[in-house]
Amino acid sequence: MRVVFMGTPDFSVPVLTEILGQGHEVVAVYTRAPKPAGRGMDLRLSPVHAMAQKFNIPVFTPKSLRGDDEIAAFAEHDADVAVVVAYGLILPRAILDAPQLGCLNLHASLLPRWRGAAPIQRAIMAGDRKSGVMVMKMEEGLDTGPVGMAERVTITPDMNAGELHDRLCAIGADLMVRALAALSRDSLQFTPQSEEGVTYAHKIEKAEARIDWSRPAQALHDHVRGLSPFPGAFLEVDLGKGLERVKVLRARLAEGAGAPGMVLDDALTIACGHGALQLLDVQRAGKGPMKAQDFLRGARVVQGALLPGCV
Image (spheres, rainbow, N blue to C red):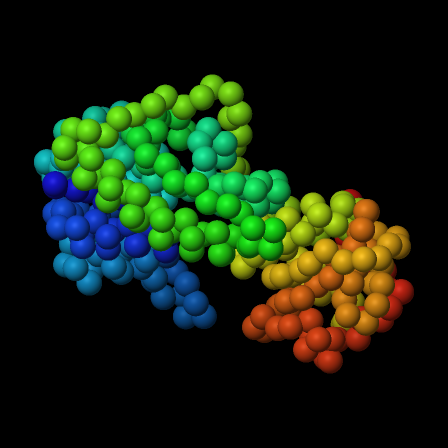
């Protein structure tokens, strides 16, 4: 089939490569425009943009798809279907209607739970034990379209967002090409989403990454997992030059009790509102991830110290 692919981050790349591997003709790729990055602030292509260039696929980076010129240019691709995977722009009705068979979206949640921008992180932060990927036919509403195919996965107790991302990424690529095969045979059946259980996965704000030690240990464990490896839940601690932010990339539930934020031992076990959390992998600003024991060699965090962070 003639496919227009629309995506931007790493999560989208395996879907694009799998579609190409199955022999579909990707006539155009739409992605977000290059952004300044790094110390030199050089323009950096999105992961999808870079992959499209390797296959010599025409790439389009419009700021919006609502203008008449952009709508006309999209229609000229004469696509059978558009595949959308974490693209980052709203598709107006004229774009949704342009491909003969519509627009298919791969979404990383069990819809209608976690519609929106950050379904992987929000699922783990909420303590969900199940997640998955779904192929749906796009409508003008936010992730409201009927579902054609789905695959479910278990979120294990210590799985973080990066690990779930990679798992869903691989499953999603296979799911989308199976959906395209069924669509080409006119055998892809769509089921409306339930009107019950709708939740929204709002974009992660920087401020909410701060660890609030007054919360229960299980909630903070899920908080750390859901924000690892990016943007990273963080604590604040005085390491000799005033308060410094330290990201917590991995932790585990631990025995112990004390005032919320109290350092309970010499292994970075911190008291929470209920229970305790032992920090395993951390990262100081400007440095790479490190094990807690390595962090403690250069940062004296004494037993009995009280970390700020109760809000």
